[in-house]
Image (cartoon, rainbow, N blue to C red):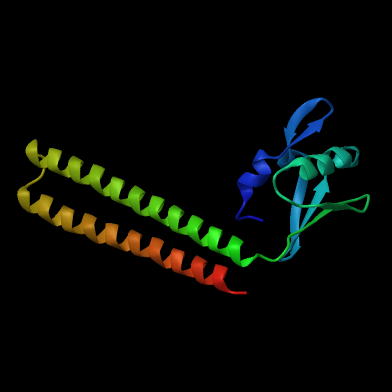
Length: 156
């Protein structure tokens, strides 16, 4: 569930008339890959937690044994796998764009330093080469992570 922390942040529970994040009301554990166990700090809030989970867009049905709430995640369908792969590609592109933006800002700073005679043309050239090497390195890391995630999502 660590890959979806935002889902839990968005999920709020009506706790004695106040909307409180589920994360603030319970601790979480993952005993099995497809099972999330929610341990409420206050057992009196279990009903409200279950209600919040049921009414959310998570599509999960909580199971309550009086002490903990268990959320069982169904296996991914082929359609959902494709959606997640597309999402991973979108996030990877956002990462590549961010790396390129950092490169652009750094290059502008280097050029300004050269114009102000704070660095020489040789220093500018060396720095730009190093900047490009770092850019290529980090974009390569984004590509590698995307490849791993795509492979992981394609496994059945």
